[in-house]
Length: 128
Image 1 (tube, rainbow, N blue to C red):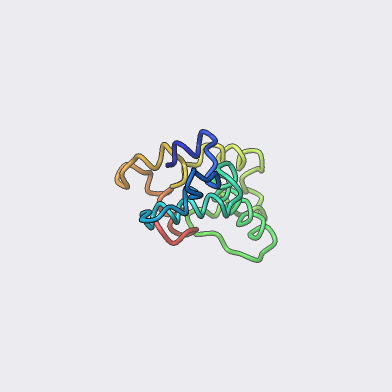
Image 2: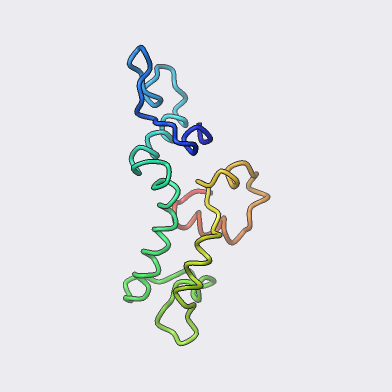
């Protein structure tokens, strides 16, 4: 399903019986939740961007003093200190940030994922 959606498949398109991808009878709950999340995000690209946008929001909130980053990631999110990471470097990091929503990451077992990436994903989403 991920591959189909990543190539532009429309989850709202109905078949001859009027069933959409997420509305088929006897559909696995996990697949239905996944399709629902993609639709709720506004499409595949928005679904992939959402975790990165959450990191940008966290950085903005940290800069305003309204949030505190995890201690080991202070340099990445804190913009108030003189040694803070420049915005351009932060954006470059986001370009290479692998989340559970990325197809390459999804095919890896949890043991293959960088522990720091796994920890931040768990903190942001409450899951691995």
